[in-house]
Image (cartoon, rainbow, N blue to C red; front, side):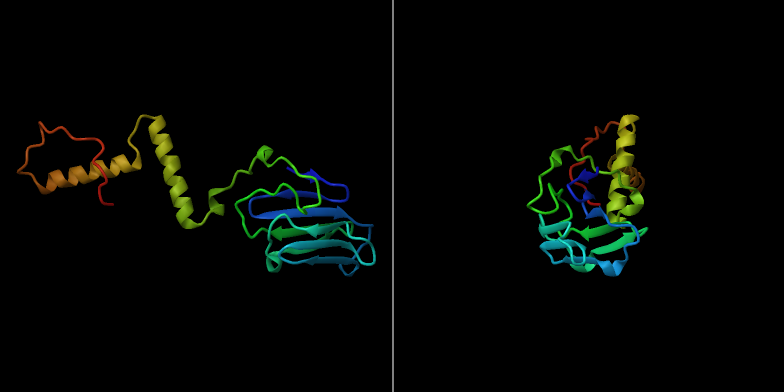
Length: 173
């Protein structure tokens, strides 16, 4: 969702904020004056009052933040949040706040996730589909396989009258 301020627009993900503001046609990078520290930002044209200036809502990573002039008519600033699991109600503390409870996060692709997180999400999705179809989850399948292996290792035991507790407790992985 894009938010319109008086002289700029901005949007965010949990990881970053993108700010855009118009500049006169033909504007070059050397005519732009942008400075950021971990807690402040100042952006505008050289020799003119900043379009955006003030204390940031939260810390950013200046070394990971960039800006470009798009088609010589618009500046795009991308700032990386340090605490990347929170929504910002405004870019600078002097700007009006937005209602962060109204933000709908963009759907992320599994390919955007690191390997461990991706595996966990895929397992959760698989288990959810299994439950919806009335089929055993991956954990239930694992426990069933352990039981089957145990039965094969102990053919002398008769399991025909055994009542198997579905919970199995906390079995080792």
